[in-house]
Image (cartoon, rainbow, N blue to C red; front, side, top):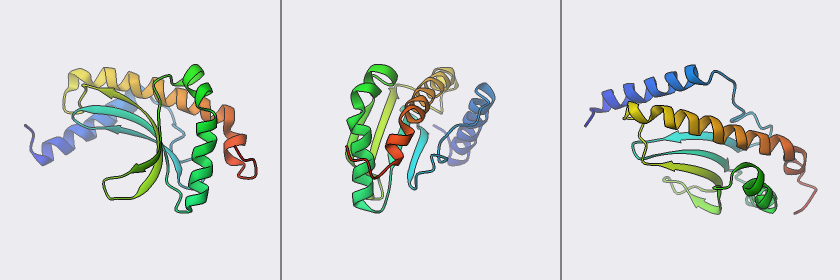
Amino acid sequence: MFSKEEAQQMKKQFWIEFAEAYPRKWLLFDTKIKDFSFKFYVDNKKAKVMLDIENKDEEKRKIYYEKIESLRMLLWEEHLPDAILERNFYLENGKLISRIWVELDNVSCNNKNTWPKIFDFFYEQMNAFEIFFYEYEDYIKDLEINT
């Protein structure tokens, strides 16, 4: 078991090594859509690559989610076959968002032996998410086009 400080240092080292292994600028928060962002997540059990739709305007959140949902067969067949789509996802703080994600189990940011597997997963899955987004960006951004 690690102390809190050791765990923080390990996580910091994890992100430094990931950036060194895959030195590129990721889309993440630069989608040009408010509260619509891609995220990396890792803990001591799993890793995730996520698209979070956190718009405070319930109607906008619903529309953005439904646009992604309307493209789900393309998402699954051409980009992320294991993607999970959840319209109503509650964060630990109780906030309601919509989330689309892929997950890798049995890895840990506290186990350096699993880092290469996580790094590859992050790269492959986020790259696939970004390609999907860029391919359908105009449709996703246009709130006037209903699903």
